[in-house]
Length: 44
Image 1: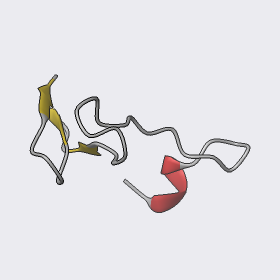
Image 2 (image 1 turned 90 degrees about the vertical axis):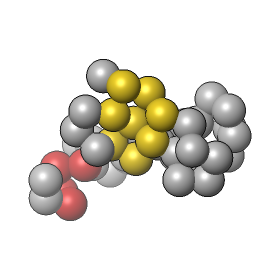
Image 3 (image 1 turned 45 degrees about the vertical axis):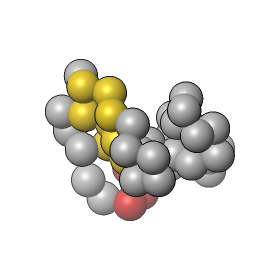
């Protein structure tokens, strides 16, 4: 995915925050969302 595809038309990025940590974002790995800080994982 290209970097410009991550941004909305108004220049903001839509990302999910970790429900366990609250202060870090979840990385999208295609089949799962993962928090690098606490290890929380959501399988899609």
